[in-house]
Amino acid sequence: MAEKYNGWTNYETWLCNMWFNDFDFTDQMDLFDECEDNCDVLDIIENYIESYVEEYVEYSLSPGDQHGFINDMLNAAVSEIDFRDIAEHYVNDVVDELELIKDDAKSELMGV
Image (cartoon, rainbow, N blue to C red; front, side, top):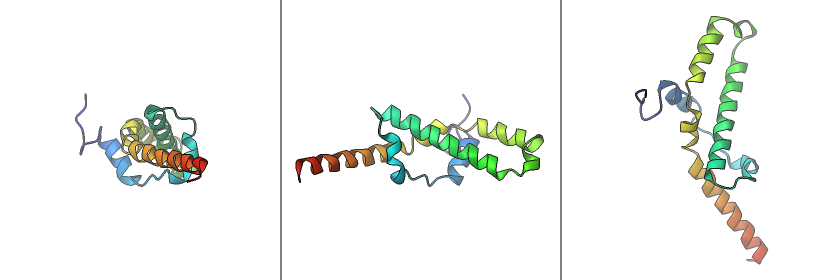
């Protein structure tokens, strides 16, 4: 197993989190409507962050850089990112928010 970097899986994961450390799922809680447990929430967060970073990388490259050395190096670095490690830092906040939403819905049903 590779040595951790500043508490993260590796340098690439740490760097990704440093640049994208402000994920806020408050406005996207509907993504988690079908979740049955925390693992489902974690999977969705991981996939969301991975897609976001991959799209960011794709749109950041100029058309001439989308093939060749720079593209290959960037893709190699992105492939080393442990998106699950990053997602684990958000899962508790999302689960807490989901609980608040459920509690509010129950209160409304009970007329409180």
